[in-house]
Amino acid sequence: MNPFLQSASWLGTAELFNRVMRLGTTVIVSRALSLEDYGLSAIVLVVAEVATVLSMRTGIGSKLVQAPKEDLGELCQTAYGLNWAIAILMFMLQFSVAFPIAHWYHDSRLITPICVLALNTLVAPTYLIQAALVYRENQFQVLALCNVGQAFFGNLAAIVMAQMGYGLWAFVVPGILATPIWWFIMRRSQSWRFRGRMSLARWSEILTFAKNLMGIELLGKIRANVDYLLIGQVLGMEALGIYYFAFNAGLGISMSLIQSLTQPLYSHLCECQGDRVAIRSLYFSSLRSIGTIMVPFVLLQTCLAPWYVPIVFGQKWIVAIPVVMLICLSALPRAFADSASSLLQSIDRGKVDMYWNLIFTLIFSLALCVSVKGGIMSVAITVLVVNCISIPFFLRWVHRLDILSSHPTEVCS
Image (cartoon, rainbow, N blue to C red; front, side, top):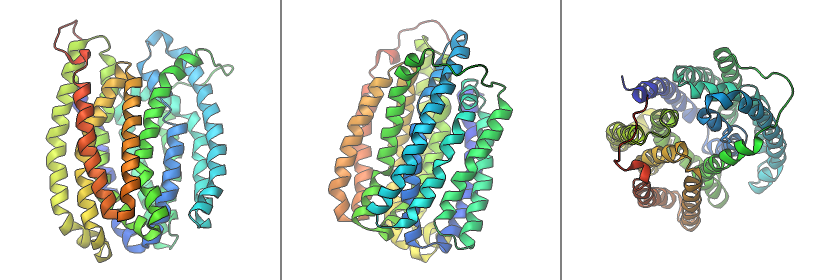
């Protein structure tokens, strides 16, 4: 089997299990919780996701994936120290922003969940090096196992908490359980352990590489969550609850599938450094595979939304159906944009990718600021239109890179 497709199949199988579990959980939770609970949970999870980007998806691990074998030991020691420094800083920052956020949304119930989820950042440095090495070695079966374990225990906890009447904690507890699951599996799968004194040798080299990737991740999270923040402030928690449900019911499944298809691409492209033919072949074959899977899946999900939403989730969510359909369609261009970003990062063009993400985020955010006063349907239309117009321009530029020209070079082993 094609190595890329084999890696994707591991993650795809895990995501299928995850989504089956999540679907059952969403059915139960959506019937047990109120629109306001959904709105509050959206704010809490936005803060947690931004903190995750700044503490766990900093690009440091990606440097370890790309690094030459002879430099790996020293870079791992340095990366370990950098991860701890960033984690402590982000814990203090996340803890401190809980109070102004609660004041901004006029709801003190936001404080405790935000503070509790901040504890995850203090555990992450104990397994992040192992996770990067797993990724480097293309052990995607290990990542799949983490996803399956997280899905099983997290969804089970969400159901129990929802049925016991704990409201937004049904969304918070799965995030708390994810960290010990990843810690256990990663440390069992990789023998690397920190030895000796904390070192910051070659820290500049790591951060120079990582800064663009962290910027890209952060800008991506801003785009993914700015609509939640605006809707919650302008239209209120109930409107945000409807919109957040639409994203979970519509885009959640598609984005999980996209991640399972695009996540292995980066490490496989890194294996072909310097080989123009192999990079070109792998990249375009991955686009064909993604298109073959994603296009019919998204179109089918969009067409079936008016049927499955009221039957599966309950009559109170009928109002969300038009938003679900629009958000479903917006998944199509995102799949190809993620693949192009993986290509740019693997060939040390991360700065270009960051500039693109910065421009795209500004356009996206400004468009949402204008459209939010028109209601959640106006926001959903804006999300679809901006993605469908902007991303093809990005893809056209990437496909004109020299690295994708057809001049032959040596064959990748």
